[in-house]
Length: 125
Image (cartoon, helix red, strand yellow):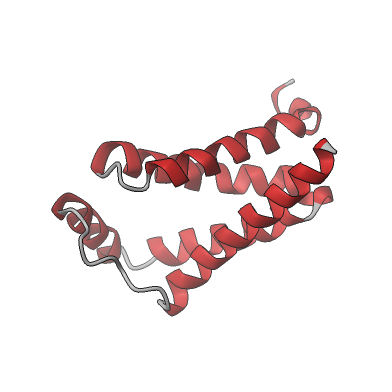
């Protein structure tokens, strides 16, 4: 039962990150109208660095794809982890509006990492 729940959560998690990564290239989701000024300033700064958003988008797409499949889930979690840390920082420092969703996604990622801890032992041993 636990593996089925983890698979469903991994599938949804992966699809959300694939969607977010594709949006960085095709801009099909509109930006909210009521974004705080600090967050707008940060997003403008990120956009000034031309290679940053495509890099994050590629990491989100690749990590999302890898997380969906159980065999590659551990690698996908490693790719998504730095992106997720950035999402958590933005949602704690700049604007708390997205924190509940980011917190749930971060908890799912931590569970994926915990369930694959045996695969990470060669990296730290």
